[in-house]
Each structure stands twice: as C-alpha cells, then as structure tokens.
Amino acid sequence: EFVEKAKTADGFVFATPVYFAHPSGRIYDFLDRVFYSAGGYDAFKFKPGAAVAVARRGGTTAALDGINKYFGIAQMPVAGSTYWNMVHGLYGEEAFQDEEGMQTMRNLARNMIWMMRCFKLGRESGILYPETETDACTNFIKRSDTLR
Image (cartoon, rainbow, N blue to C red; front, side):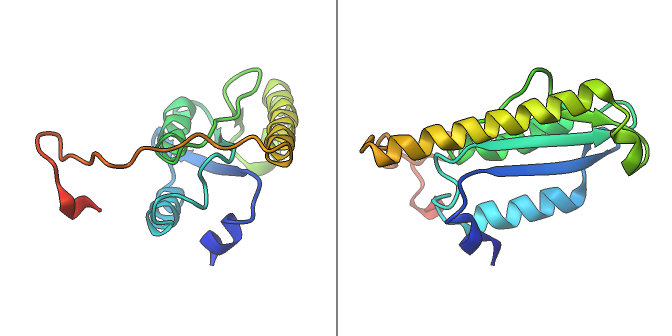
C-alpha cells in the first residue's frame, strides 16, 4: 500500500527515535519492506529524501546514517539542513524546546520544498533523468544472475 502511494509522492521524510544509538527496529523493518518490495526502487528513484532522528542524547548521527543508506541505494538525492537533521528531548514535547534542533527542522522543510520544486520544474522543462546502468550484477567476486 505504501509503495503505491510512494509512486506519486514528490519526496520523503523518514523519522526515527533513537534507541541504543541506532534507528528504531520499527523504522528499519518498514524501510526494509518498502524498499525491497519496490522492485528496482522505481517508487523512490530521483525523489529527494530526508532522514530525521530524535534522541535524548547520543546516537543520532548513527541513526541518520542508517536511514540515509536507503536513499543512496535508491538513487535518491538527500536533503540536508544547517546541521544534522536531529532534535533532542526525552519526551515528545521536550523536542520543541531544542531551539537549534527546531531551526534545523524548519530549514530542512524549506530545503525539501525547494528540491521538490526544482525537480518538478525540471520535469516540466523536459529535462530527462540520467540513464541508469544495470547490466553488471556481481556477488563481489563473480557475476550472479540469481541476484536479479
């Protein structure tokens, strides 16, 4: 169901709380399912993505790194901000007290909107997406037709 909606989306923001210095198991389970089931990542390809992490203290950059890996393998440009896309707080409302974190989120939102507008204008102007080569598929050592 999500993959069908993703096909018509202009961009994505995936957020996670941080548990034990990494993304939640729930977001990993979700991303594994939707990116794998997207078959060739066409629902996500060339659409901007942003990862957001919320934590009491540490582990946010590791969480962002984990989510950003999905964007990279799906050929998604990654939207950034004026700092890492994170806010801090133990409980939900506390995150709103993180002034720099909230500023980072506002800048991230503006950057995502700008990127999506640029991509839309590009499509409307006839700018084509780059061609993706897919012929070579190896299992580190030798070609593997079973990976397709």
